[in-house]
Image 1 (cartoon, rainbow, N blue to C red):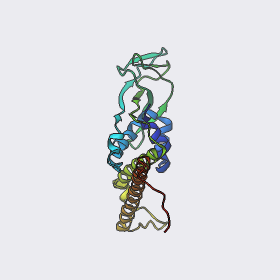
Image 2 (cartoon, helix red, strand yellow; image 1 turned 90 degrees about the horizontal axis):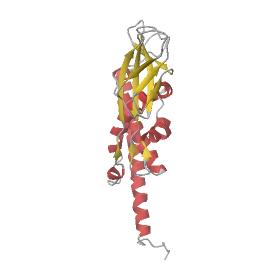
Image 3 (cartoon, one colour; image 1 turned 90 degrees about the vertical axis):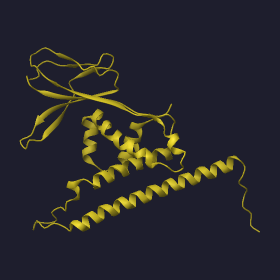
Image 4 (spheres, rainbow, N blue to C red; image 1 turned 135 degrees about the vertical axis):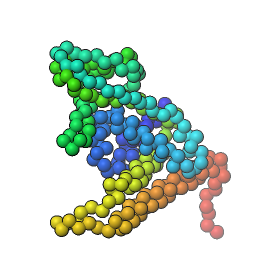
Length: 234
Protein backbone atom coordinates (compact mmCIF):
# COMPACT_ATOMS: atom_id res chain seq x y z
CA UNK A 1 0.00 0.00 0.00
CA UNK A 2 2.96 2.30 0.44
CA UNK A 3 3.63 5.14 2.86
CA UNK A 4 2.31 8.69 2.49
CA UNK A 5 4.65 11.66 2.58
CA UNK A 6 2.21 13.43 4.92
CA UNK A 7 2.69 10.72 7.55
CA UNK A 8 6.46 11.28 7.58
CA UNK A 9 5.98 15.05 7.81
CA UNK A 10 3.34 15.14 10.54
CA UNK A 11 4.25 12.13 12.70
CA UNK A 12 8.05 12.24 12.49
CA UNK A 13 9.58 15.39 10.98
CA UNK A 14 7.38 17.86 12.87
CA UNK A 15 8.26 16.12 16.14
CA UNK A 16 11.88 17.13 15.47
CA UNK A 17 11.08 20.63 14.14
CA UNK A 18 10.17 23.24 16.75
CA UNK A 19 8.67 26.00 14.61
CA UNK A 20 5.36 27.55 15.67
CA UNK A 21 5.03 29.18 12.24
CA UNK A 22 4.92 25.78 10.55
CA UNK A 23 2.47 24.50 13.16
CA UNK A 24 0.25 27.51 12.45
CA UNK A 25 0.46 26.90 8.69
CA UNK A 26 -0.51 23.24 9.16
CA UNK A 27 -3.67 24.27 10.99
CA UNK A 28 -4.70 27.24 8.85
CA UNK A 29 -3.61 26.29 5.33
CA UNK A 30 -2.81 22.56 5.15
CA UNK A 31 -2.55 22.44 1.35
CA UNK A 32 0.11 25.17 1.32
CA UNK A 33 1.83 23.65 4.37
CA UNK A 34 2.25 20.22 2.75
CA UNK A 35 3.37 21.83 -0.50
CA UNK A 36 6.15 23.67 1.34
CA UNK A 37 7.14 20.61 3.36
CA UNK A 38 7.26 18.47 0.22
CA UNK A 39 10.29 20.49 -0.90
CA UNK A 40 12.10 19.58 2.33
CA UNK A 41 11.10 15.94 1.80
CA UNK A 42 12.36 15.99 -1.78
CA UNK A 43 15.76 17.16 -0.55
CA UNK A 44 15.72 14.82 2.44
CA UNK A 45 15.26 11.52 0.56
CA UNK A 46 18.81 11.55 -0.94
CA UNK A 47 20.25 11.88 2.59
CA UNK A 48 18.90 8.45 3.55
CA UNK A 49 21.67 6.56 1.72
CA UNK A 50 22.75 3.87 4.19
CA UNK A 51 22.50 1.16 3.10
CA UNK A 52 22.82 2.24 -0.57
CA UNK A 53 19.76 0.15 -1.47
CA UNK A 54 17.59 2.64 0.44
CA UNK A 55 17.43 4.94 -2.57
CA UNK A 56 15.60 2.34 -4.66
CA UNK A 57 13.49 1.35 -1.62
CA UNK A 58 12.37 4.99 -1.30
CA UNK A 59 11.07 5.19 -4.86
CA UNK A 60 7.57 6.48 -5.29
CA UNK A 61 5.33 9.22 -6.64
CA UNK A 62 5.99 12.86 -5.84
CA UNK A 63 3.12 15.10 -4.75
CA UNK A 64 1.27 17.38 -7.14
CA UNK A 65 0.01 20.84 -6.35
CA UNK A 66 -1.39 23.99 -7.87
CA UNK A 67 -2.69 27.41 -6.94
CA UNK A 68 -4.76 30.25 -8.26
CA UNK A 69 -6.31 33.50 -7.07
CA UNK A 70 -9.82 34.91 -7.22
CA UNK A 71 -11.19 38.38 -6.60
CA UNK A 72 -14.79 38.68 -5.47
CA UNK A 73 -17.10 40.77 -7.68
CA UNK A 74 -19.36 41.35 -4.66
CA UNK A 75 -23.08 40.68 -4.41
CA UNK A 76 -25.35 38.52 -2.32
CA UNK A 77 -25.35 35.47 -4.60
CA UNK A 78 -22.88 32.62 -4.24
CA UNK A 79 -20.04 32.52 -6.77
CA UNK A 80 -18.56 29.46 -8.48
CA UNK A 81 -14.95 29.69 -9.63
CA UNK A 82 -13.91 27.26 -12.38
CA UNK A 83 -10.26 26.73 -11.45
CA UNK A 84 -9.49 23.88 -13.87
CA UNK A 85 -7.56 22.24 -11.01
CA UNK A 86 -9.18 18.82 -10.90
CA UNK A 87 -8.69 15.80 -8.65
CA UNK A 88 -6.70 17.22 -5.75
CA UNK A 89 -6.97 15.73 -2.26
CA UNK A 90 -6.73 19.04 -0.39
CA UNK A 91 -7.88 22.58 -1.07
CA UNK A 92 -7.18 25.49 1.25
CA UNK A 93 -8.25 29.10 0.87
CA UNK A 94 -6.68 32.20 2.37
CA UNK A 95 -7.92 35.77 2.16
CA UNK A 96 -5.22 38.20 1.10
CA UNK A 97 -4.76 41.44 3.02
CA UNK A 98 -2.04 44.05 2.98
CA UNK A 99 -0.74 45.10 6.40
CA UNK A 100 0.17 48.69 7.22
CA UNK A 101 3.79 47.72 6.78
CA UNK A 102 3.07 46.61 3.23
CA UNK A 103 3.40 42.91 4.11
CA UNK A 104 1.04 40.47 2.42
CA UNK A 105 -1.06 38.59 4.97
CA UNK A 106 -2.83 35.29 4.30
CA UNK A 107 -5.84 34.94 6.59
CA UNK A 108 -7.45 31.49 6.77
CA UNK A 109 -10.86 31.24 5.11
CA UNK A 110 -13.11 28.20 5.48
CA UNK A 111 -16.28 29.28 3.71
CA UNK A 112 -15.41 27.88 0.26
CA UNK A 113 -16.27 24.38 -1.02
CA UNK A 114 -14.18 22.45 -3.58
CA UNK A 115 -15.46 19.84 -6.02
CA UNK A 116 -12.45 17.69 -7.01
CA UNK A 117 -14.37 16.13 -9.91
CA UNK A 118 -14.89 19.44 -11.71
CA UNK A 119 -12.29 21.72 -10.13
CA UNK A 120 -15.04 24.20 -9.18
CA UNK A 121 -14.76 26.18 -5.95
CA UNK A 122 -17.95 27.76 -4.60
CA UNK A 123 -17.89 30.87 -2.42
CA UNK A 124 -20.93 32.06 -0.43
CA UNK A 125 -22.61 35.36 -1.17
CA UNK A 126 -22.03 38.53 0.79
CA UNK A 127 -18.29 38.82 0.20
CA UNK A 128 -17.23 42.43 -0.37
CA UNK A 129 -16.26 43.45 -3.87
CA UNK A 130 -12.53 43.42 -4.45
CA UNK A 131 -11.77 40.87 -1.70
CA UNK A 132 -8.93 38.72 -3.00
CA UNK A 133 -8.36 35.05 -2.17
CA UNK A 134 -5.51 32.62 -2.72
CA UNK A 135 -6.51 29.00 -3.42
CA UNK A 136 -3.99 26.19 -2.86
CA UNK A 137 -4.42 22.58 -3.99
CA UNK A 138 -2.39 19.53 -2.99
CA UNK A 139 -2.30 15.78 -3.59
CA UNK A 140 0.10 13.86 -1.38
CA UNK A 141 3.14 11.95 -2.55
CA UNK A 142 3.61 8.28 -1.67
CA UNK A 143 6.49 5.86 -1.33
CA UNK A 144 5.86 2.63 -3.23
CA UNK A 145 6.89 0.52 -0.26
CA UNK A 146 5.46 0.43 3.25
CA UNK A 147 8.25 1.83 5.40
CA UNK A 148 9.08 0.43 8.82
CA UNK A 149 8.84 2.56 11.96
CA UNK A 150 12.61 2.89 12.03
CA UNK A 151 12.75 3.96 8.40
CA UNK A 152 10.03 6.55 8.98
CA UNK A 153 11.88 7.90 12.00
CA UNK A 154 15.17 8.25 10.11
CA UNK A 155 13.46 9.85 7.13
CA UNK A 156 11.73 12.30 9.48
CA UNK A 157 15.15 13.20 10.89
CA UNK A 158 16.42 13.75 7.34
CA UNK A 159 13.57 16.20 6.71
CA UNK A 160 14.32 17.97 10.00
CA UNK A 161 18.01 18.25 9.10
CA UNK A 162 17.21 19.85 5.73
CA UNK A 163 14.86 22.28 7.48
CA UNK A 164 17.46 23.08 10.16
CA UNK A 165 20.20 23.78 7.61
CA UNK A 166 17.84 26.00 5.62
CA UNK A 167 16.82 27.83 8.79
CA UNK A 168 20.43 28.22 9.94
CA UNK A 169 21.37 29.77 6.58
CA UNK A 170 18.53 32.30 6.74
CA UNK A 171 19.99 35.82 6.71
CA UNK A 172 17.72 37.16 9.46
CA UNK A 173 18.37 34.22 11.75
CA UNK A 174 22.12 34.66 11.32
CA UNK A 175 22.00 38.20 12.71
CA UNK A 176 22.86 38.59 16.43
CA UNK A 177 19.83 39.41 18.57
CA UNK A 178 19.48 42.06 21.27
CA UNK A 179 20.40 40.45 24.58
CA UNK A 180 19.31 42.90 27.29
CA UNK A 181 17.83 46.34 28.05
CA UNK A 182 21.06 48.02 27.00
CA UNK A 183 20.27 46.90 23.43
CA UNK A 184 23.66 45.24 23.14
CA UNK A 185 23.99 42.33 20.76
CA UNK A 186 26.05 39.18 21.05
CA UNK A 187 29.03 38.27 18.96
CA UNK A 188 28.07 37.59 15.33
CA UNK A 189 30.94 35.11 14.98
CA UNK A 190 29.87 33.19 18.08
CA UNK A 191 26.25 33.12 16.91
CA UNK A 192 27.16 31.74 13.49
CA UNK A 193 29.58 29.26 15.07
CA UNK A 194 26.79 28.03 17.35
CA UNK A 195 24.44 27.49 14.40
CA UNK A 196 27.16 25.66 12.48
CA UNK A 197 27.96 23.42 15.43
CA UNK A 198 24.30 22.56 15.93
CA UNK A 199 24.03 21.53 12.28
CA UNK A 200 27.16 19.41 12.57
CA UNK A 201 25.82 17.62 15.66
CA UNK A 202 22.46 16.92 14.02
CA UNK A 203 24.07 15.58 10.84
CA UNK A 204 26.48 13.40 12.85
CA UNK A 205 23.61 11.95 14.90
CA UNK A 206 21.64 11.21 11.74
CA UNK A 207 24.56 9.42 10.10
CA UNK A 208 25.15 7.37 13.24
CA UNK A 209 21.51 6.27 13.30
CA UNK A 210 21.64 5.32 9.62
CA UNK A 211 24.85 3.37 10.21
CA UNK A 212 23.21 1.34 13.02
CA UNK A 213 20.19 0.72 10.82
CA UNK A 214 22.40 -0.59 7.98
CA UNK A 215 24.30 -2.83 10.40
CA UNK A 216 21.05 -4.27 11.78
CA UNK A 217 19.84 -5.06 8.26
CA UNK A 218 23.10 -6.82 7.46
CA UNK A 219 22.89 -8.83 10.69
CA UNK A 220 19.30 -9.86 9.95
CA UNK A 221 20.27 -10.92 6.45
CA UNK A 222 23.09 -13.12 7.78
CA UNK A 223 20.72 -14.66 10.33
CA UNK A 224 18.19 -15.52 7.63
CA UNK A 225 20.86 -17.25 5.57
CA UNK A 226 22.05 -19.24 8.57
CA UNK A 227 25.48 -17.67 8.50
CA UNK A 228 25.45 -16.79 12.19
CA UNK A 229 26.34 -19.27 14.92
CA UNK A 230 25.89 -18.86 18.69
CA UNK A 231 29.04 -17.65 20.36
CA UNK A 232 30.51 -20.19 22.78
CA UNK A 233 33.20 -19.58 25.31
CA UNK A 234 36.32 -21.76 25.14
